[in-house]
Length: 267
Ligand code: MLT
Image 1 (cartoon, rainbow, N blue to C red):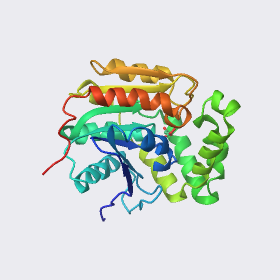
Image 2: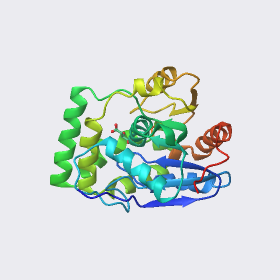
Image 3: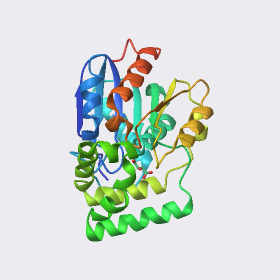
């Protein structure tokens, strides 16, 4: 076993804000956040293991391990504490980070994700996709995962956005796809983690999200005392890509409101 150092793109100065991407994408999905949030914060967008420019390593699939990778990104940039945010799979990693590295968080952003673990049929489906991707490549993702990644408004009226997401899905490395499916299938329930949070939580969801619907977002917001819930109109699962200005506005307002953001760096 060797420790993986995540490839990371960073822009801006100020409160560090780490954004963790969805499955099966990469930090490329945060382009509009690197541009739109950099005026007020230091935006740090790693490629989770195996995706984008990051190596997969030889560890067993684990969301906890992905969270520890993110802690090493903070170490490498001499950051004690940051706002940690993630969308969907990135949200699962964010909740694992909250469990494993609670002292390193200024606040949490959970977008289009869920705190509940997978039911058995979903675990089986993930294993099926993992096997088929390893055998046949990413065509199965384009057929079975891509359609629900964006909402109906984007699919109907913003073909360029849907096409960009399709390109990212097709580019996903198959070994990382299989590894991440198995890691997500093994993830634990995070409701207790949310109930125990000592830092502010922002929950964001697209009103047209078919994968992690508004009800999942409401359940997470209810679990954490004082959490804020923002529903983004005309967006599906990929709120940050489909409605970047609305997404950036709610995240920027949240970051400004987080206590302790003024002294972000170590040493
Ligand atoms: C994602 O967007 O990261 C995936 O939909 C997560 C999942 O498969 O649960």
